[in-house]
Image (cartoon, rainbow, N blue to C red):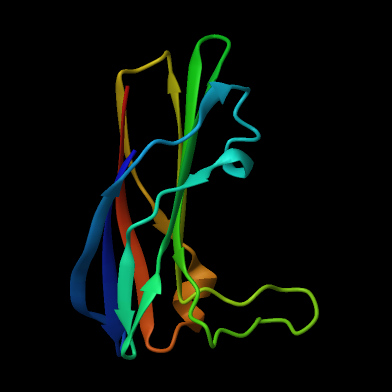
Length: 143
């Protein structure tokens, strides 16, 4: 899996800057399944950092692929960063809120040699990030 990640920054309702953070690649799990457990069985691809307030934050990049009968192929990916000072949105139940968080999945008939898809930002992370930031990411999977 190869992932190209861009950080989008906005202020006053307009995009103010788009920065390409990194392009990382690495192996992800590929297994037989009906697609339901694809997200739970993803593997992290290391190597992406995000400069933020004088620190380099680790960006979590994850993905997995499943092949089902039919044949049908499922793929999932996610990209997120949680700063060390992140707080939960709800005090007792929630985990710390990511500063930026995007995910996506795709379902394709057959067993393709390659697939490509983009990730969608998590609206809750976008609305709660100060300043407003989110990730845009393009995913490429090749056999």
